[in-house]
Image (cartoon, rainbow, N blue to C red; front, side):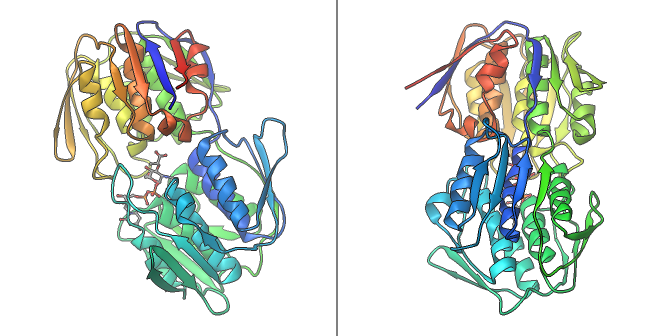
Length: 420
Ligand code: EPZ
């Protein structure tokens, strides 16, 4: 398994191109199931998860053809020839579950493996299933698979989510697009990726009101057509590289980054002493003076994203003073803490909160990636540490970050991927 070696102590300086958002690309690819025309997506990130979703769509008969050499534009289309999403794909990528709503809406049936657990939490899918039942689906759980069927078309309904769920909002918005009548999704997620999926669906002919708000109203249509859609830049990649610039004491231009998608991340990073300057084509991120501790609580958008929690904790590990990091979305998203402490960080976890006491410096060490965002937090710590840090199990990283070592090396980091 590949590892990444970083020798810390070099301030980053240069430019990083922000890629397309992973968490918009995956639902938009699933939306390709909703039409028998061609859906062309551009600004597609080159990630392991995108390749997994391509494999899954092929199981259903949907071909995903590269439009450009670099595969950053994909054309999806084809007749649905299979409605089963197998365990060996779903267990690798939970976002596979996003084919359930589209399959059900398009052909009236789907057999999708339950995603099973994941490192950061149990991550049940009860809201997805309850919502689909409200739209008229019959859901049976057997042998670890969800068997969903509907006679005729799904019927619009009013669905009130008890708490915000990105995936449930996406699955149900896609299903409702082809349902008969009106569907209202109340307490819907408002992440920019939801808005991007909605924009893609509207381009395909869906009728969706309230985009960007917590109440989405969808008037179902008989069929959806093809469309061309450019995926928004990845706000989590943006925040991650902003932390890289800050923790290394450097300055990096994040080309293509959008300030308006960063929500509370901007406020919190600025509070911690990170200088973020919006420019015509992106964001200039610098650390002019010292970093200082800032408290943060993860919340649904526009609050501070749970997907930025591990990265921010690495930054706070070398800030002056203490910071309290509270994780409210997932029950087990502190697996990076013991690894950061191996590098000399002083972090104590108490239930859903972690107290981070900033230290003068970290020391390089062999550490293990445990999940996607934790992997990046270890690389950030490595950028600031004295000596070498070797991050193992970087397959976690490759799921959601494109060519991290190349992007950071281009800004002067002493970093390389070590095969084996
Ligand atoms: C999406 O996951 C993202 N993944 C996650 O990003 C992100 O952390 C998460 O949203 C929160 O923002 C993709 O978009 C592919 P949720 P999702 O449904 O949809 C509970 C990354 O690093 N819940 O908003 O699975 C759930 O357990 C990944 O890129 C239920 O209880 O997240 C969690 O505690 C990690 N029942 C909370 O809600 C349900 O039916 C939020 O989950 C659904 C969710």
